[in-house]
Length: 163
Image (cartoon, rainbow, N blue to C red):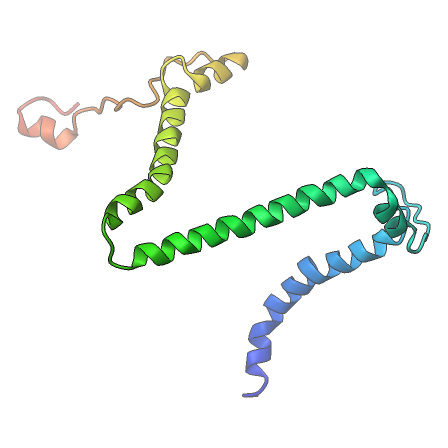
């Protein structure tokens, strides 16, 4: 039983991995050897004809060029990020200034999201406009503090009637 326990723990993750990774990849490889359009139930086996067409049509090489461009750009971006992470981990002059400059775009993103939500929920804003399309006229101030009634215990203590 002791040797079986790790395999029992791995049973669910392996089932999910096989179901959602290996089976779709296998189906994709099978479909690449057919002329199936993804909709019709007919699948005719064409062999390597799809791959022959893929590598002989010149307009498809532009797709490869764009993919190669993004691959090279991501390698450059990761290299620059690793360089800055390494340099800024050492004690150097103006280190905190450089950290602030590199971190500044993350702050701007949060500020922009805050403004989007502000304009979305303000009176007469996007939410009110969308609700008015469906015939809901809302005079609700979404971002204001709702007025709260006086609690009963406070009303009783002040001598007022709680009812």
